[in-house]
Image: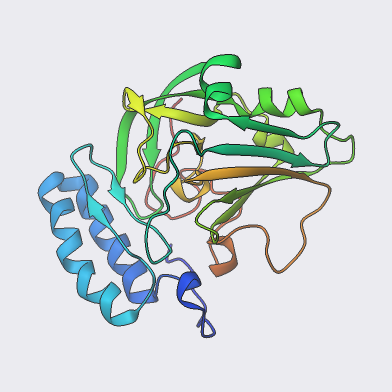
Length: 251
């Protein structure tokens, strides 16, 4: 299924969406990458480079890496925070707001290990990725969610990207506030120091550079339900149901 990308208005430089040609290129080459492996994936960057440059999309880096992920940002550059600078705020419709540092997330809260695929809506997949972090459900239980809350909103410290999950989705056991992946700390290109990982959904739901989790009683336009959803992508991004390319996961 081709993503529906409406003709956008003129965006400020930090908020330009990926253009239709780039999305189609990602879909086509993403599918080839799944079928034929790293060589085709490596050619993806060369294909997309002139598209992103000419279309001025804000897609600053879309490159295969040694761990088979493709790294990109919707802003002009990837944001950076050191471990010492990092803070995560959990607030909104809760009994008690929290501000956590990296030591809280790594050492002072219950830890969960999870090994699952990372599946992009454009067709490429990295299988059996080890993740480590705090279950989002545990964080929500710690702050106490209001009885009339319906959704959870996530913010990236890139200042642009947002995402949402329903409260039921957010309380699944396979949704992590992740500080480790691939056997080590989440790196800056992968969204570190801390990112969201939503195992059963396509990668655009797994927001990078996470710095705020807000429990809300209702979603309100135009900022919700998320960056890509506002460009026509599915809100419920279950793998196997959104792009017409993939089978649903077996686990």
